[in-house]
Image 1 (cartoon, helix red, strand yellow):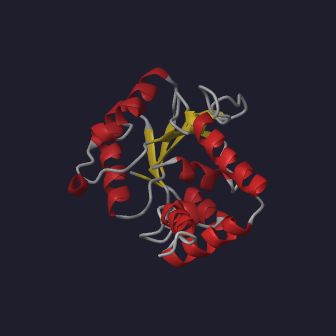
Image 2 (cartoon, helix red, strand yellow; image 1 turned 30 degrees about the vertical axis):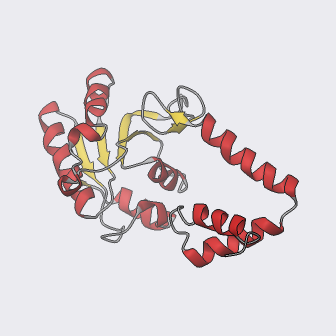
Length: 199
């Protein structure tokens, strides 16, 4: 490989590390970046760097935030009695896009997966139980993905929550089994929330 192409190869290799970016797409993006004015590339790099530095986790729910509390937890018009439990912040964004759910969230940052060594201590289960002990929550909606890990996590949480006297529901399977909430359209998500069932 010539010295002239090595920087493009390095950019492509870094872009290829992003989810959903294959080698060909990474190469196309690298060539596009190579053709951009230097100031535009600097702006892109600074936006990525500064954006990543500014992101933290909400101390209450675990969602992405720019301060100690996310905008959803800081919104006094939200229904504090309803708590939607999701795998990660992308799922919060997916549910928020439909503009129908007005409760709060709890982000687990993963799902149970014994094969991968992920147990209850590796996701935010203790924090969920602490919230339920200190906040008045009437309903917990289990909105983990309808795949093996998501179902196992929902079942585990339902067993934990039942003795606490909190109504525990599961989103309906309007979302395809094996699918990700992040890629599900708003109508399907709305139907899934409307058709949730007791666990």
